[in-house]
Length: 123
Length: 234
Image (cartoon, rainbow over the protein chains, first blue to last red):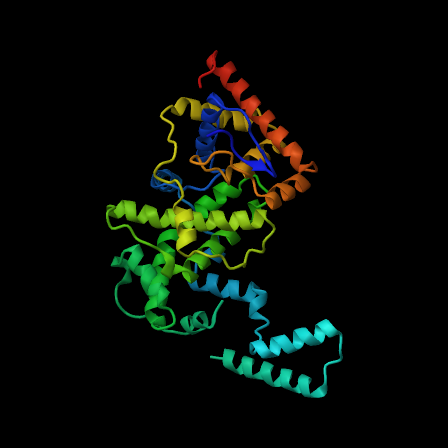
């Protein structure tokens, strides 16, 4: 290693020699502190040992595997707006870009598409 | 969340003992969520129960003392959801023993969590889709098996002590963020500009000054080691 993180054109560290070893020891120490996530199988084993020794109580929201999926869907903005098809989306985008009023026909089509999507989403 | 997930939610759990299946097999079943939602649902329940304590533990550890501290739960949930969505991209290594194969899956989950954190540091929303295809998978594997492993635990422990006692909050934050991008095999690594800009904004400084803060932090760590050992141990 000739240095670590850098921004723009300049490396963050321009010192060589035993500073490289310092970077490596710093990274090891951060793994020990949990400041960086485990990457290697040995890192994982270390966390597993801690887990065995200390345990880890899950918060209620993480206890149900299906509730986690459900909660995420409820949080996702994508769940609230599902374009009926690419044409509809493109028409709306075009109308928005040109600042034109949406015609009654287009509005009717939007409503029909929305209802169709809602019906499709129902179990 | 795609439509196949909705179908999965309303599918009955398939009977059969999925608890005896290995992780790679469970991930394969999960990846069949469109074709066999019942199997996927059963496999997901087992896979999730098996790994969520580990995932939550690392999320707690990595966010502790940071601006993401109150989001450990969200980070853990997002990590598992992305594993669910990208289950088919996991590549098993059958040369490993059962413990090794379990740890490989957990290293994969950690890599997903790390990518989410890096996205957040870049200002990306948590629900952004990520690519975990073959190229990214290699990235997930990273330098895992060739990484530097210190044999001098005394020095590593002293460095940990230096982090806790010798650095101010700003120096610790700069080291912490930059180390998320650390790769011991690469020379002259660069912090992505958007990450550096965000970090500089949060610390009310400039991107150029981050380098100086980082060097100052390293100097403090080195001085701490010299004081502790009476000589430079590196």
